[in-house]
Length: 520
Image 1 (cartoon, rainbow, N blue to C red):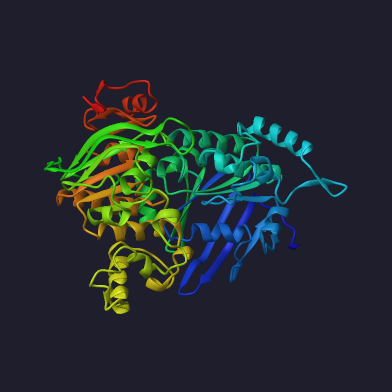
Image 2 (cartoon, one colour; image 1 turned 135 degrees about the vertical axis):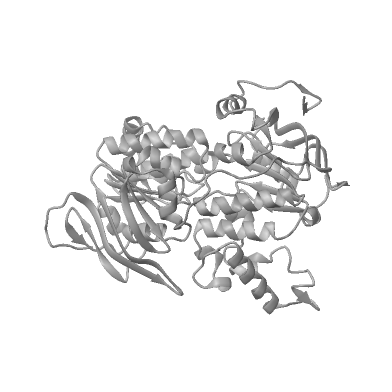
């Protein structure tokens, strides 16, 4: 790292004419971004627009082919994250960089440990972290292991890592992608507190509501190029979405009333044991999903939705009850046999959705490679796999540097998600289990995925949606089932309810009468 060319500037960070290339793609093409002191500056763009790449350049994870970076008017060279840290630049990545078996305290001080006579000393570190925690409203349990705390607490840990290192420029890459609505509200307040204390924040997000709520200015990227920078107070969501996508975007789901047909999924008195405590994670749940309807399970994260989906798809064993899919009892069938009539867009795209070191085309046929279309005489028909993958890539606008041969790991999170959605919707199954299907997607991609789910509904498919996004729940669902502490506590018609009433059910403050495990 070296500093040169002294000069004064109103900007704490300037990234001037940055170009970064990867095989087959120019991720950043002559981009300029300027961050003022004490401001929250949002970076907005479609999946694969180059936002995370640009921030990774600033944090020293990538070296640009062209351009320069200035801090306080001086040109600096950032060759690695250690250089960035020395310049008081910190970053919270979209997928957290924490060691799960370490405590919160040890994760925060890792790489910046205080030692005495060669031994690690934690007392001073604990006092400093406690003071930071109190000052910025970042309460955490320093002695808890990361694997035992919520995603929201993991994010607070990442923020405290930056503050512990006295960072002045804080980069947040899609910080709300895995948070509950309540955790998002808390994070927005934390960001405002940090900016009020003089921190300068770069905030990558797809969510226009959050950008309008918290940012001072917005820089928009599209397909690796700079589109423009606007003051948030002088714009609106529609204008920002048009800048981002390059066309008018339908921000409200357009769908006709549902016409439910026969029962596709019948859940009766279904219970799933908890992995963490003695009571059931899912307790005596009963409901039905019919052809031609979208039924949404809504609730605050951690109230049994994930456990229910694991039990339904076979990732976890049920404790009691039954599951009937297309008139077949699947309660005790293995995952492959259940998937004969079920598509599953999983909550965790890395853990259950993709094999990250496989190519995109290999991931597209993970559950179909045994079908005659893709294999003959126990040999894979590679030309057919390639052709099929190319068709889905084009249809769902999955962007990758090398097309079907791109390693899944190298793709942006949003494009990984689009690949999973493309694969699962194209499998043409009677039941579609869609868990957080638009997590990490931009407004253009969300518009397309919502339209595809509605089209599947209108074609007679039964869709079970699990979502933490209240706007998505209200606009996409035909019926809403609210889950609280592992039980269905209410069934709501989105046309006859509102977010406030939905919130009362989600927090357990209100519930319908339940008879025999079924909402009445």
